[in-house]
Image 1 (cartoon, each protein chain N blue to C red):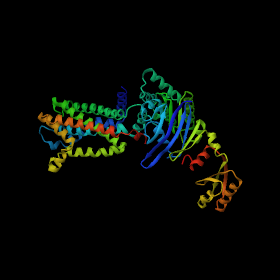
Image 2: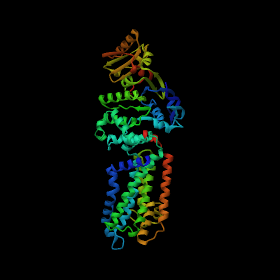
Image 3: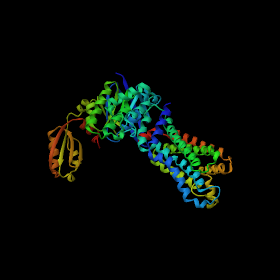
Image 4: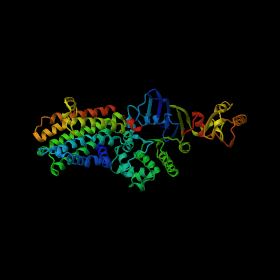
Length: 312
Length: 248
């Protein structure tokens, strides 16, 4: 299998803060790599470095066989970036948007026409090609945002939260489009806050936290590592009296999170641990109306590794 | 070819912004009419009417205000967001800011040239008669400087709002000390000396000498100074423009 992205000991700091702290990873041809991490994990910095917009402080990056520093222009020609913000002109038609942006890659004439039609087709906006994006829904704008990024048929596509704030129908359309792009031979880096999207489309998942890669592998492999864990969620009615530290000290408990009335506890699967949790809650004057339990999932993997929920 | 396509697109973007279009086409005419009308009694019956004076000074002010058009064309929120794709595309970073300078300059130069001709031939404002091309040259050099200066401020600040706010200070300084609204000679020797720092003063002085005295002594020094300052702004753009500012 060809290596499309090879990153070795990549570092980037802003003033004294290390945004990316010596990460190494590789991505193979045709792979969809899901990039997960809480805010400030270093995902966007990593993406901007791979997009050749930011220069790394240290480390080696090769994309499609080209060196990131010395051959940035060759890389730019062959990659497509879907930025988190919707980067389109609202006052010109959908077709004019795609035409202008793909024109920046040197295409013209019939080839340009073909690429514009193909991109609009892929995202399901060809019949809206003459409409201005200011009349579009949020989901349609997101789809146009993708069309503008992939029209030049990039070999590597980097998507930074491409589905933020859109309706389920548009989300499904985008996820299906991504699968089609992969079938056409593209390699994709997909950064998102939506766990279910990563579970649906990614071949491998990379979790970042505080500038480091804390886990990378297939979904099943990541879950395997914590298969003996279980997550309990209690709906409690007197959170003000609860001392989370007491619960953290119970043998077997690995993580405690309190959001309003929802108390989420990750622990080893053990009867004693569950009994300890319940009695501690009752001793603290917390009665609970509801309790659910969940076997290990990607969400619990993330919580276990970062100590935070993905959308924190 | 690609550069010209980007510049053309940027030019069309400015035309799609009604505020920018208004401030560079109709606004100068309104300013000339308003100031000329309000102050006509101060000018008596000499050979320079209030419309003649403000015809030159308001065009100069409007040309200087092209700085604001340049900052908007480069980093106004909606444009900036879409322009991020130029950062990702395989084009040199110089093409990104040079296209904004060129598009702003073309708009200003077309617009102010037409206004000057309308002023002279339709409203009979004295722009020097046969010397009009020299006045056009002066104004166009100021437009070039304003386009470069506004773009430079964006490169240095990395943000349209900051660039526009800070750019207003030199515009205010140059205008006030350049004698746009009133003559600064009555305010004492110190103020008169300070006013020599204002390019607006050079242009007004140069323009009035050309129009009323047929004196071209200042034309070359002023145009070369403005051209040199424009080149200096472009150099600063190249040194300070950070594409990553677009990604923030």
